[in-house]
Length: 500
Image (tube, rainbow, N blue to C red; front, side, top):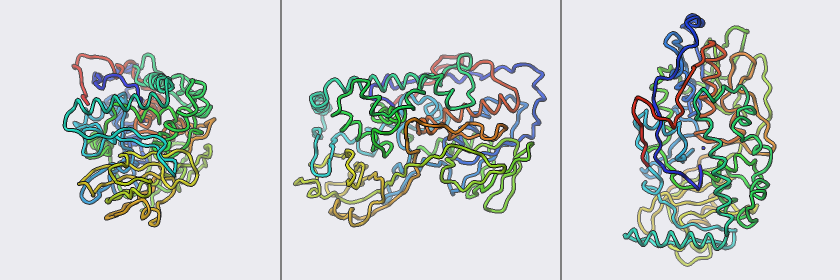
């Protein structure tokens, strides 16, 4: 899951003892041999395992199995190797108020970095391309002197203000309001209930109404100018979700938040959060084993895999989008039909062709090229990941369709290496959104990705997973933590800081 109007990037949260049991009467409520099977090893599945271990009392010694159809964990968090250099290929940025991710990075002792301090370009030069010309460009001036960079940054801010006016401030306020409401999901258990449906989870935080209308309508109601919505906002939604401002309002707000300051990532790849959580959670991990069916007899679930193995589980958790899985249920389940938005990520080691953009030299091309909503545009964005020398760069291209060689040859004057990845990345957002239930069968079959119809990020997956873990404990074992410090509180264990 971000805001362009961000608070301090240092966050303090507590790692205190997590709960008190309701009563000793619950001590024998569950057989210690109870088994939880989780389908999917991304941030959702690994977070469910983590929170089950973290919140369970000692007598609930679950056996936890995670099934992953791919040879590595991480789901949609993945890296790509381009000519010996590693770059994020999937979910790539985190917001300074993503407290679960911050907690994970500290818990797992993972190094973090901000995009501006990494090997990747900070994309300080930004342009909006309409297919024929740049309708807006910021200044680009590289200097060894920090005060020069500050002057250029100030000049760019004035250029933005001159073009879009006070609508920029209204956009910041819109995003900040949504982020503040989302942060209610970090409150302590005394004030934060367990949610059985996505609808009630969103209504409790005051976010539900944003899912009932489009981003365009929400921003117009907030007083943003049509020019800002048509240009800058559209560029951001096309980059972050591959969609236009016709997407639903909450996902759109999250997209705008992902363009702000203070953004960060895990050095070496965000997938390490999932790997670390799985490693710490005493999980029986099954790589390259896809579950093809889940059957329930009312007392337990039987999972059958493509390797012809069969597993019995007391609790089954689906932590992967069902929309394009060939997973069969017996008895059948019913969830709202949902299409996934495919994003094609193309990585190119080479050199852009300035003639394609109507320019004279490569140096005139912004480090980040965004596009507005025009049907014939072949790409959503092109960004510089790394500059090797004056005529050698690594680029990332986002597009809604595969980038054919002929198109790439017109955009690039040189291509030394090309890697294409087709991500079934997130839902195609359409207001009003309709949500699948967290509990798929009224018993103990759970669906973490039901929350993705509200917004799809690493942090929203962790928030949904934490709720599902609490839901499992409250329904399966009748054991509910009585208290848990909020993630922003201080505790006896000392303060934990993450400095970005």
